Each structure stands twice: as structure tokens, then as C-alpha cells.
Amino acid sequence: MKKLSPLQIERLQYQPKLPSSLQNGVNSLELVEGSATQSVRDQEQIQALFENTYGKPTVTFNSSSSSNSSEVRNVGVILSGGQAPGGHNVIAGLYDALKNANSSNKLYGFLGGPSGIIEGKYVEFTDEFINDYRNTGGFDIIGSGRTKLETEEQFKSSLEVCKKLNISAVVIIGGDDSNTNAALLAEWFVKNNTGIQVIGCPKTIDGDLKNEQIEISFGFDTATKTYAELIGNIQRDANSAKKYWHFIKIMGRSASHVALEAALQTQPNVTLISEEVEAKKMSLSSIIDYMVDIIVRRSNSGKNFGIAVIPEGLIEFIPEMGSMISNLNDIMASLESDSSFTSASASEKFSIVESKLSSENAKVYASLPALIKTQLLADRDPHGNVQVSKIETEKLLIEMISSRLDEMKSAGQFSGKFSAQSHFFGYEGRCAFPSNFDADYCYSLGFNAFALINFGLTGYLSSVRNLTQPADQWIAGGVPLTMMMNMEKRHGEMKPVIQKALVRLDGPVFKQLQDNREDWAMNDRYLFPGAVQYFGPSSVCDITTVTLQLERSKELASV
Ligand code: FBP
Image 1 (cartoon, rainbow, N blue to C red):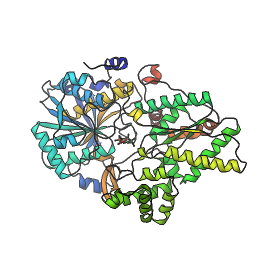
Image 2: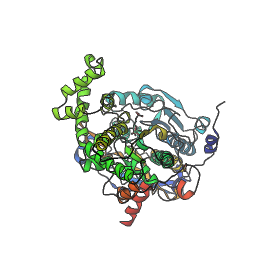
Image 3: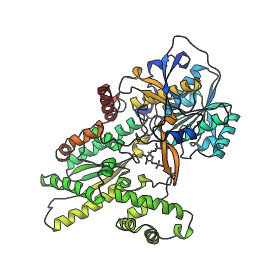
Image 4: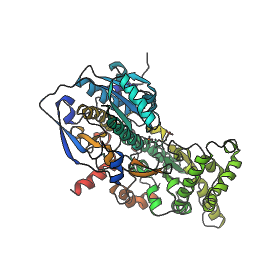
């Protein structure tokens, strides 16, 4: 028999909330169509690529007093990409909606991510199976993977597997790339008259899958609350011992939403925002200047300690680094199967790469410590990009700041102490038990995904909005995936992709940081959020992030 922790037992009892429109099940709904939509950019190209699924209207569900019967449906579900808290509840919501609509409906889970549907690896969900995973973190119910579902051959294999299981709809739970693939699959299924629908669900702790229709991706709330709890604990340690600077890198790949939200929840002394670094064209050396200035000023007022929050993707946003990394990505792609490179020693690899980089980029590469040079040569992700989670930017900054302070010491410009500790928070938050907010949001997204299926829609992303209000006031509906797309360069070719949302430097969330930066740098305004994901004052633990509240209050003020 499985042994469960006391919190696990407690969370299994949690009953996720639904928007009032969905509370009577998917057979008691009416669908309200908005107007026809367009892609965010590159309309002609996107329309040409998605002839059958482009331009559909957004849809909203209202509860209806009449009750319709629902035909028997088999549905398949895929968890795709990095883990995000709440994935299990999306599946639980989908399962409950599907069984509630017709008890003969079946839900299949494809194993190990998108490769499961290609290779026909699956499980059939039952009450008993699902019940063990309700309100738990992780994606281990069926596993996840990063296989890109995009080729004709993969689509054909997926069709065969769906036919075998009599599946008429597939739900893909993923981030921007996985939902781009969901849009391609939806289009292919329509084009080939298969009758199979595809619905996406917005997942990623990174918080960069958002737009006017999707307020936030799931997992962002729990992950940021978890990191904020950890940062708060470190701040208390730093404030107690008063001897270390803690450099904390926080996950989020390109966008700095996670670092920014965690900073707003904890008020550390320094918060770097990659989008700002890029906009201000800050070199690595000017970032060091900025941080050294705060370290020295704090030291002069007797504080040889502090907290610096660093977004995971920073390195790619520093102009000279970004240019060198993109040059390096191309070189790495060409060296991938070159055995004289793959079998070379570390120092030989450095020289090979330097000889192939442009002279400017070679200088930047050569100036880096060996540790970072090696990390920059690690395997690329499926898109050919460097895996920023593997680059210890926090250590790079510590090393460069230490040498700068040593020089200043020798020149009599610094008499304090600098002793640093580095941390990387990423995996610690991706599989935490979903917060109350994520447990409710995810369950609603899954439930709503089945409502979209029941109305025969395809190529839509499940959308639940009005998230700063109590769950019963949330608005359920769907957004055509093509509406969020534009053309971007991938592997040297222009491809249709869902546009990533980066931190807006003209938005209220960044402004909140900007307005307080100097105060937080010099005065210790640390906040210690604690573990508020599940229990505690409902004004904190049941509501969503500072980011979304600031964004929504600005939107409402402008109405
Ligand atoms: P998704 O975009 O798939 O949601 O993954 C996000 C993420 O957690 C990033 O924050 C991080 O850079 C990356 O995954 C790490 O990937 P991996 O799990 O492969 O190490």
C-alpha cells in the first residue's frame, strides 16, 4: 500500500473550485461566440499556414437551464514540457467533466509526453487511479517529455493511435511551443478530415504564455510562492548572520516574470530584470558596476550582507553575450556530429569554438571563466538553444564582483567584506503541491477543456479569466490558438509560433519594482512570506500573484 505524507492526505481532501458557469457540468452550458479573430502579427502567413483553423471566434460559456445529452467520446491527454504545479488537477478536471457528461466516456493518458501519442504508449484513467493524484504536484501521473510534435510522419502515427483507441479529441497541456504544436496538429487533423479535435491548456511556471485572453499560465502562482518562501527564509538567515551576500538565480528561461514576482513578494536588495538589461543595452561590466555600487554603499553603512535575485535567462539578454551565444548555437549545431570535436578535451573545445566564432564574439567567449565556457558548450535544447538552467550566471556574477572588489580594495576604494553564497531555485518549485489558486485554476482549465470538446471545437486553448476575483466569478471559454501566433526564426527558418510574453517595462508590475528599488537596496525591507500556498489568511493564500493583481487593476482602471 502506498504511504502518504500527512500534507498529501490533507490535500487529497481539498475540493477545487469551479467558475459558476461550469458548476452544473458541461451538458448545461451555452456557448457565446465573440467576433472573428486574427493572429497577433504576420496575419497573411499564419492564415496561409492554418487555412482550416484560422480566424475562428473566441468563445465564452454561460450556464444554461436546459440540459443536453452528450454523445460517447474517448479523449487522450498529453503532458508536455517542463513540470508545473497543477498538471494533475487539469487531468482530474478533464476526467470529472468527461465522466459527468457521459459515464461511458473514456480518458486515455499518453505516457512520457508527446512521444506517447506517436508511439502508442498510454494508460486508461479510472476513478481509483485519478484519485491518488488529486491536488498533488508533479507530472508523474503519466510523465512528460519535450518531443516536438510537428512532422507529417508524427501526425500520421498519432492518427493511427487515435483510431485504434477510438479517440476523437486530444488535450495537450503545455507551454508556448507545445501549444504551437497543438495548433499544427489541430490543423492537420482538420485538413485530413479525421474528425479529431485538439485543445490546448496553458502551462508553464515561466509565466510567459499570457496575452489579453490568457491572464496567466498555470504553475506560475505556486512556483513563485514557493521561491518567495525560500527567498524569505534566506533573507532571514542573511539578516541574522549579517555575513553573506546571497545570489539567487531563479528559473523562468527567457522571461523574468518569475524573478520579478518573487522579488515583489520578498523585497530583496537587488533584482535584475533581463528585459531591462536588454532595453538599456547593459554590458556585463555595467551590470557588475550596478551591483558593486550597491554592495559598497551597503558596506559603508555597516551592512556586508544582502540578497540579489537574478533571472535564469539573464545571460542571453546581455547584448554582447546574446550575440556570442547565438553565434555559438549555430557553431554547436554544425559540430554536433563532428567526432573530433565531441571527443576533444575541454581546453581543445574552447580553442575550436574560439576559432569559429566571429572575432568580437571570440573575445567575449575567451574572457569567461572556464566553468561558464564549459557550460555554454553543453547540449542544446530541442530548439537548438543553450539550456540556460545549466549556466551558473549567479557564480559568474559573484566571481566578477569579487575581482572588482579586490581591485577596489587594493586601490583603497573598498574596505568592507564580501563573502557570497550562490543558489539556483527552479526544480524546487516546479513540482510543489499546487497552491489553492493553481489547484482551482487547473481543475477549471481541465473541466473547461472538455466543455470545448463537447461543443465540437478544435484548435482552441482552454481559457479561464477574471482570475483576481473569487473562483465562482471566473469566466470560462476558449481562444483560437492561431490568434496568439506570429512568425519567428527557428533553426534558421521562419516558423509559426505562439508569441512569448516578456516582462513589459512600461507595465505596472515592473514599475512597482522600479519605484522601490533604491529603498529596498539600502534599507532592509525584507518580506518573509512563509508557506502560504495552502493554508493561512485567505487574503494571501487563496488569491493569485502580485503580477496578475497589478496587471488587472491597471486594465480595470483603463476601462
Ligand atoms: P516549459 O517552458 O516547458 O514549461 O519549461 C520551463 C522550464 O522550467 C524553464 O523555466 C527552465 O529553463 C526549463 O524548463 C528547464 O528545463 P529542463 O526541465 O529540461 O531542465
